[in-house]
Length: 285
Image (cartoon, rainbow, N blue to C red; front, top):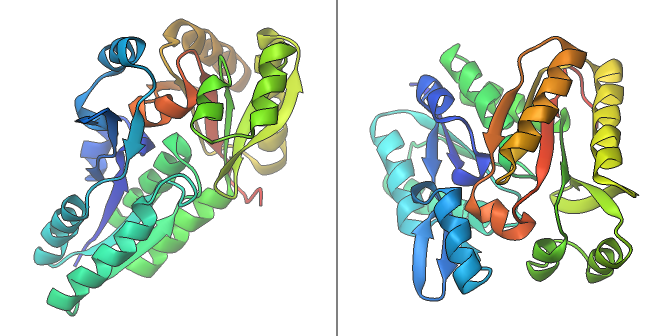
């Protein structure tokens, strides 16, 4: 019996890595009125063109049937499952997965399914799934793989700079007052995700200063706790991401991957955002 990792599309794990580590993925959705798109079936260029025409869409979790089908495929093969999903404060995916787990256990009495709340999204979720999948391929059991995933969450940080706070405000992901302060006073916030919720780490006056502050925080963490892996995220801001990755490579003397954030998180953060996600060798929390 092997352990298989099931995550969701807001992890934004590179497809090559997904395939290499046999990570299974269920897709969240974005909806413009009555028209729904699976996140993994619409690219950012098309998505933001539609959004310009139709306004900001809503997002939704994977269906019960899709979650059931993915879990059933794995247990039918005799394997156990570790599910790692987007923060339960940001989506109902985690809660629905628990209900689906009970449905699976009614039919497959001996199935082994564990579910972890990543308390985040994007590659902060993705790294947890990646390290868990590596452990599974090494032959570790379900309990050990789950512990490794949870430990990674304690050692990871997601720092990001939105181009505007309008999307976060409209999506209810950050307080209205913070959104207004940022827009009217031209203060640039550096945001993070703690305990499953988007919060303001600090605020500065310029985008250049915001990026420098984000890098400084990352360097402080690395100095204290060591570095595991790191990735630069962006939403339709590849040139800025490339510049940031180059600066980090010069500082850290390692290759830095660049990864686009897709439509579901993009709906709430908006185009032009840039981010760093990393995890350390030792616990930060």
